[in-house]
Image: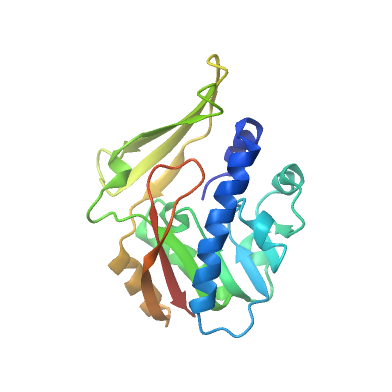
Length: 233
């Protein structure tokens, strides 16, 4: 998952107006998705990693976020924040695992374990996002985004594992005011394919697995769109 340091760092250099516009656009997409699900009343949502969309979702739903208290206070969120997925005692109507949550792993077993943990807290529907690793191979590219009229730059570098090409490390660099340089700790990543996730979901007795054809998601300050995927547990 995208670590807390990213969200704490980027909050300080992001244009607040851009944040609001991006967050609202994403929430509009999820509301369309929620309306299409066979759930009469959605009351609770769990985010297994922080995402600023929670600041809008929490106005209408009871939200629980797995992230540090420093992120909660920094973003002034009114949601409940817990340290670990094991701290969630009751399953939520919706689990919203965004930003390619299941690719933050070092092995297939790590991914299976992560999905099993998400199943435990999913009372109805899991919503997650993935890029198309079969046709696009996004992990073989690097991205650069400018923030605040080029005064600040965010660089995401992906370095492939020389032995296992399904694995890579994501390095994120912040260049502020054209002179201050910050490097975040690298994150271990692994590809996840649609059919692979469908198989893992089926192994956990998941039903109704679907790649939402008409809905796409793009993370904050990300170049590539991610496919929205749903599975019922």
